[in-house]
Image (cartoon, rainbow, N blue to C red; front, top):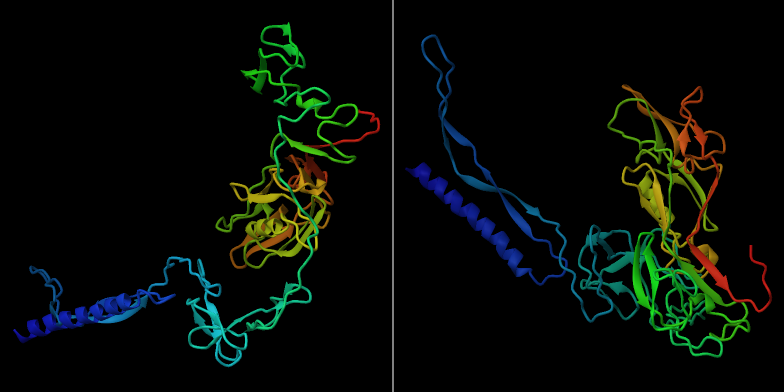
Amino acid sequence: MMRSLWSGVSGLQAHQTAMDVEGNNIANVNTTGFKYSRADFGTMFSQTVKIATAPTDGRGGQNPLQVGLGVSVSSTTRIHSQGSIQTTNKNTDVAINGDGFFMVSDDGGLTNYLTRDGDFKLDAYGNFVNNSGFVVQGWNINWDTQTIDSSRTPQNIFIDPGMHIPAAKSTEVAIKANLNSGLNIGTASRPLYSLDSIHGYNKKTGETKDENDTGTTQFYTTSKNAIDVTEKGVDCASLFNASGQGLNLREGQGIWVSYADAKYETNKAGLSAFDENSHKNQTVAFWGDGKEQKVHLSIVLNGVKIENKDIKSIDEAVNYINTFTVANDNRPGTGVKAVKSKDGSGIEFVNDNSNGTTDNMKNIDLTVNAENTAGEIWNATWADDKGFTFTSNKNGDKTLWTATAMDTGVNAGKIKTGGETNKKVITAHKYIYSSSAQDLP
């Protein structure tokens, strides 16, 4: 009787501890960066009254006679789930969306503490501190060069209260606008409309039509689909008249016209990606094993050289290439975004021609340098006692990025065709006004 009472009491005590944990969670509902806890229950040792017996001739075995002695709280577990991001009216409030912690210190960085609480403020001396006065650790900006050196040891984040940041003059202005369809062309008032299929001719009726009639003409949306539109003016080919009037274009001005995204995918030969779970010899399009084996990425994309000797995976290659998409103060951008192919064996380059006005921000102009080993042919040799060893199987200056087939003869595993180091995909064209006569090819 007493044993059953003690077991019941242990359940009440364990439940009380769990309620204490939940009460603490509720009490901290407004605590910034708080992570809730959970009580973990565990059964206590059982009392063995009678041991188990083995089967004997003519008689079966018996289970032991054990009586449980109750339950206890074995531990509490902190649940590090993502909290909700809230908007505040304080400029120094910050939050982490995903993994990671803020680092703070009370002794200048000798001892560091981690926190998810981003309720920071500036003290009278310009230190970036939390509510306990601990200074937030990080990398300070060099105001002379406008750069942050992340290779140095993190230090106290400090902002001089009397600091004045000099204004930086603009070096480039970009304008996005639609052409006004109501502007005059030449001396007659003619609004613009989409190009019709044949100049001055209605293919549907087989009749010659004046450019400014109000009848119907035929406009093709695809090679097999046509729709009727009402004639509203002259073709867009008449943007500039003989004197360069109408849109008031000056010498050297013009427009870009793009009819599709520019796309190009590496590994045209279709080699497989490296499979670390397949313990056999492999000939693959290799981007690193994700651990120790590195490859050398060396390409020129839209005039921008992209080089990294420490690539360990195709994801690292994609992320590194995409850091060059947008221009910065030190270099132009490529305008091209890289995406990993579905099977992970190659990279698809995409330029939607939506941004940028310079030649290097349009289309795709890809050059694969001779020293490039990323995404090229490699041999992965398996040994049970050593694992994989990797050897580059690149055929001279030829590149798998542009290869369309592989040799199956005496040079099996080598690049057979498509070994050119440069590929261009042009879907955007630039039209520039010039007042002088031009010879068209």
